[in-house]
Length: 308
Image (cartoon, rainbow, N blue to C red; front, side, top):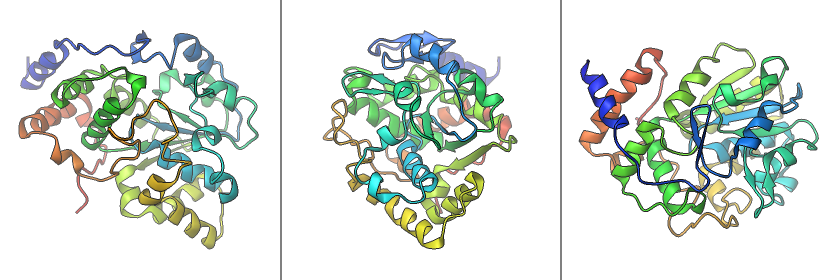
């Protein structure tokens, strides 16, 4: 057995104490109770339209950011609606069911007029079957996994949706490597969507590129989505979607969501590239690198772990 396999076996053999509310495994993927099996079954049969735009991200990859700018692009910079209606009602979370918040993704998406901008954290195998046959588009947002892991740790601490998580950073670090977190393995999710990168209906963006030049990435999205917006509209969307603007915007910051304790950690926390260095130990970083190399190293995905 190789050194990498030894490290991987050590991680997988760990026993994780934290249990998610309504925890269950669906086709090998761990979920919390807000994504129940009946919803996952229904998602597969979801009626897809050719005009649909799916936003596929792993949790904490910059999902809300992508939702806001994509919705604005597809709705010709309709800021009047954007400042009055929360993004999670304008761009539904397909596999999510929260009856307290009255947010049931399928119920929101089904009657919604076209073009629909629909969020999902699902790997390809659990997405609606019709995405393979319809002329819909999918925007995939990747983020370097070290920053993502740190952001997800803070989200676990803050959100009651994941239960009363009282584990340490080290506990979560191993949970993440093992895929023992809501929506399962980041490695499996990433591998599944990277395999679709040559599909002309799929566009892969990177969080770090959005941080370094948001306007450039908005231009890329406009081209992919075939939305030739005027320069002034693109400029306005860029200003509206800067991270600090998003964090102070009540329609995107989720401060109204009962399950998120912003005093512990807000949904939109830092949005920085390289923040992982403030939490990862040298040993953890080296172990993560070995694990990544074993899982995805042969794919040559161009992640950026810092912005120079």
